[in-house]
Length: 141
Ligand SMILES: [Zn+2]
Ligand SMILES: [Zn+2]
Image 1 (cartoon, rainbow, N blue to C red):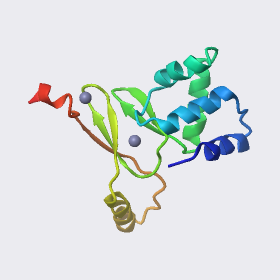
Image 2: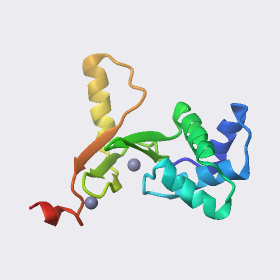
Image 3: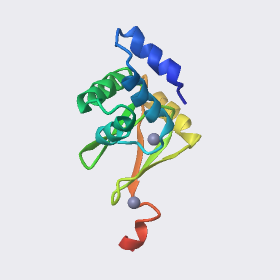
C-alpha cells in the first residue's frame, strides 16, 4: 500500500502544485476501498473544500494515472479509481457497481508464468472478475 507522502512527493517532483485540495483527493483515494468515481471523490472532497472543482479532481486523477499511482477500472463505461496498486483481484458487481479487493498470492505466479511463456516484460497487470456481489446475487438465481 502506498503512503500519502510518497504520492504527494511524486506529484511535487513532476512540478505539480500541491494544494490542500489535491492532498485531500490523494488521501481519500488511499484510505477508501470503494474504488470511487471522479464524481464521488469530488463530492467527498467538497465537504471539506467547497471550492474544489470537478476538473481539479480529473486533472489530479489523470496525473496519478499517468504516473501509475492509481489504476483506472471501467465499470459500465464509468471510470473508477484504485490507489491500491499492489497486485490484487478486483471483484466487480455488475448490478450495483460495487468493487471489492481480494488479495491472492498466486497472481504473482501467474505473471511470472505469463512472462516466461511470452518473453514479455510485464509492467502492469489488472485482474478483474465480474459477477454479482453477495447482496445482489439472490436477485439473479
Ligand atoms: Zn452488487
Ligand atoms: Zn482494487
